[in-house]
Amino acid sequence: MERIPILQMGDLLLVTIQVDMHDQLALTLQDDLSERIQRTSARGVLIDISALDIVDSFIGRMISTIATMGRLMDATTVVVGMQPAVAITLVELGLTLDGVRTALNVERGMHLLRQNAGEEAP
Image 1 (cartoon, one colour):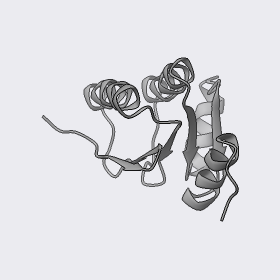
Image 2: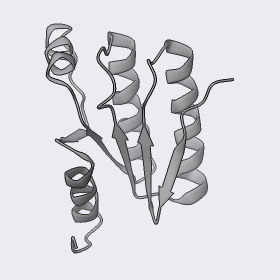
Image 3: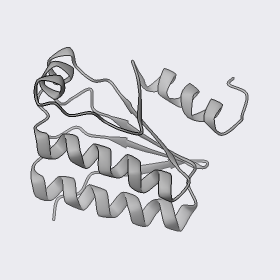
Image 4: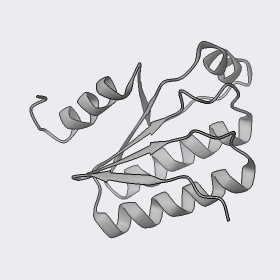
């Protein structure tokens, strides 16, 4: 079964999506992340979607669900690297990513997560 790697950096989890997402892969990622947040007591999740050219309504809802699930488990979710076409598609679909913070790139996303955790950014 295909899986997206989840890297741990201290109390943060980093997910870089490098493949086209399909529904089953999105559901597997959601399950894997919830298990990993619980097991590691992660305080933040950074999801890099810079390689995605297309995000459909299901994937958009999945990202929102991950953020909600993370909040319930005391973890903040930041999505980075959103392509302009992806942002336009989400708006056209009427999707709002409630609870999802966004940043331009991984560096800025990590800064947001550190700020949220009350740490000083390097």
